[in-house]
Image 1 (cartoon, rainbow, N blue to C red):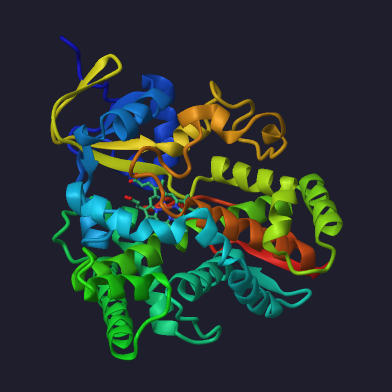
Image 2 (tube, rainbow, N blue to C red; image 1 turned 180 degrees about the vertical axis):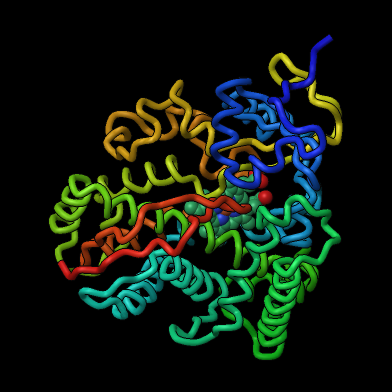
Amino acid sequence: MKSTPPTPDGLPVLGHTHEYVRDAFDFIDRAAEAEGDAFTVRVLGSGEITVLAHPDYFEQALVAEPDAFRKSDDFDLAFGEGLASVEGEQWQRQREAMEEFFYPGRIRSYVDEMASVTATRLDGWDDGETVSLLTQAKALTLENLMATLFDRPLDPDGDAELRQAVADLNLWFKPTSWVLPDAVPTPSRRRFDRAVETIQSEARRMLDEREAEGTGDDLLSTMVEQRREGAGGLSDAEIVDQVGTLLFAGHDTTALALTYGLHALSRHPDVRDRFHAELDAVLGEERPTLGDLPDLDVTERILTEALRLYPPVHTIPRTTTRPVTVGDYRVPEGRLCHLSIYRMHRDPRFYDDPRTFRPERWREQSPQSFGHAYTPFGAGPRSCIGRRFALLEATLVFAMVGQRYELEPRDSLDLAPQMTTQPAGDVPVLVRDR
Ligand code: HEM
């Protein structure tokens, strides 16, 4: 008879709540070192959570037995009937309806639009100014997403309510709320509820507009068109939830990759020099085009390494639908499991000197050669639909920032994980014209 995954020592009622809420990453590191790749933590409000941190467990939960590991309830709360939360036939139908917007050919058509949106934002950076990387990156990725997928360019200095609402979606996952049952209306949860309403009403407005005025060929228009033609498309409610899902999943994550990558560059002058030399050789002062991107090897390695050391999605949550055997353990039915990307990406069994930002490690080895030990975009059927979109956007933005500016760090970097890997502060950097 197999036993359940071990539980580190904790307090009688509080369990590990205090340590987990104070610094989840530090706690997971210590627990994994003491207990191994599978262990259970007790957190008030969430109950028992089994943390899984081995490539074999990722393979099992995401690829081999996804039916035994369903999406956890938090996805429904945040994204309603959006692609990230639904299951079964509904997921299949939605994924098929949206996939064409994320194929390589389609993604490539976004390059010029993204480059132009990015240039507008970077024009606002002045030599000698301190900017918040986090704020700038989030603004930019939201602008790129709205312009390309929804054909609804944002006003660079306006649309404040929508921008704030999208930012507030993270509040559902504030660690101080974890300990309280979902029904308790904390101030951050109330702000979260208002944010969802704002986004839904903007989504409905865009939908009505497309219905009234006819449509283009962006993702939103196509969803509206398919439904109108009865071509097995999505319902109004599903389309509205899709907009919310994409707004969050498609901008916050890429913004974090940009923030961490650019901040790491600002702290590693040797890497930054190689990066600048590559940009000077490949691009000079010309705006990057699609044809340039494959030549940006140093830039690509910087992005790969930023996604390893600071995975924007640090944990993939799942709930078991039946008792499952995981390695030497038995995980009961209905157990919330956290597949810890963060922990795997920093595991010394898989990476030399895992806590150091070292893009050169990717010179000899490809991310694919690491299997599930490198999983920033998840794995299996539910892996990230926007992976190519994100990689293209991040490469382009890194290049355009590096062509024009050199960044100097203004603060150290601390992490404060919510649903995604948020930094503790704004990540300020000093901007210098190159
Ligand atoms: C660096 C940027 C990004 C990272 C690290 C990232 C990471 C992830 C991960 C780990 C998952 C799997 C979640 C799970 O299995 O529960 C996921 C799913 C998803 N991502 Fe991304 N993502 C990024 C960018 C994007 C972009 C740009 C979009 C859209 C424009 C997007 C849309 C989605 C959607 C809709 C899903 C759910 C897919 C499904 O369930 O079929 N993501 N992402």
